[in-house]
Amino acid sequence: MSKLKISNFHTHTFLCHHATGRPIDYVKVAKEQGCSELGFSDHCPYPDLKEINWINCRMSVDQVEQYKNDVQEAAENADFKVHFGFECEYDRNYLNWYRDELKDRYGAEYLVFGPHWVVDGNIHPYAPQFNHDKRLLAKYTDQVVEGIGSGLYSILAHPDLFMSGWREWDDEAKACLTAILNAAKDMDLPLEVNGLGIYRGFVETSKGPRLGYPYHEFWEMVASSGARVICDSDAHNPNDVIAHALNSRNFAKKYGIVPIETIFS
Image (cartoon, rainbow, N blue to C red; front, side):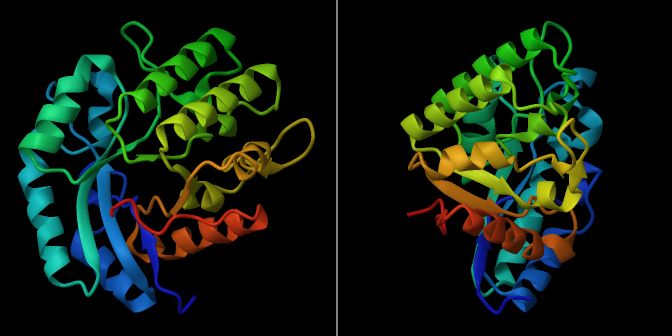
C-alpha cells in the first residue's frame, strides 16, 4: 500500500444496502493506509417510496440523521478532514429536494452527481443496460448535461459508466461523452476516475476485452481537454476506501492527468 496520503470523496456505507461498514470503519482503514481528506457520499434518499427510484439501494429519509451522526462520529476519530455528503442522480422533479432538503435542511457539504439512470416516463433504465438504444442514450446525454448545468454538484461520478454496457466506441457514444466533457469543462465540474470501475474489470467487445469503465478513449479526450479531474474510490467496503482511490490515480497517471486533491477551498 502506498505511503502517500491521498483523498477520496466517494464513499458509501451499510445504509445503502449494497455496501458494508459504518463511517468509523472507513476512517479506521483510511488512517492506516494514508488519507489526507475523506468524504462520505452515500446514495441519497428520496422523499417518496417509488420503486423507480431504487429504494432498495439507498437509505430512507428516516435514516439521514443516523447517517449524519455516524459521519460526525467518524470525523471525531480521524486525523484528517471528514465531509458529509450524498451521491444523487439528477431528476428535475427533485430539484428542491436536492437543494432545499439534502443541502440546506440536512446540511450536506457536497453532492456527487451519479448518473446511474435516465428518467424515461415512469421508468428509470439503468445506463449500462441501454442495449444500444440510441433514443435512450440521447435522452441520457441531455439529462446529464442538464444536471451538470444545474450547479448542484461538486463531482461528476463515473461519467463513462454507460460504456460498461455500450460495448462499441461508435458515433453515439462519442457524441454523448463529448457533450458530457464539454458541459463539465464549462461548469468547471471535476470528472471522476472511478476506482470501483477499475476493480470490476473487463468486458468483452468485438475488439476484445477492455475495462467497462473508466473508458480509454474518453480519458484520452479528457487528458487533452484541460478539464478538472478527481480520483475517487467509490468504496462499498472499508478495505477499498484508499486502495480503489490509489488505483484510480494510477489510471489517471497513464494519461498524464494530474488530479485535484480536494473539492473544498
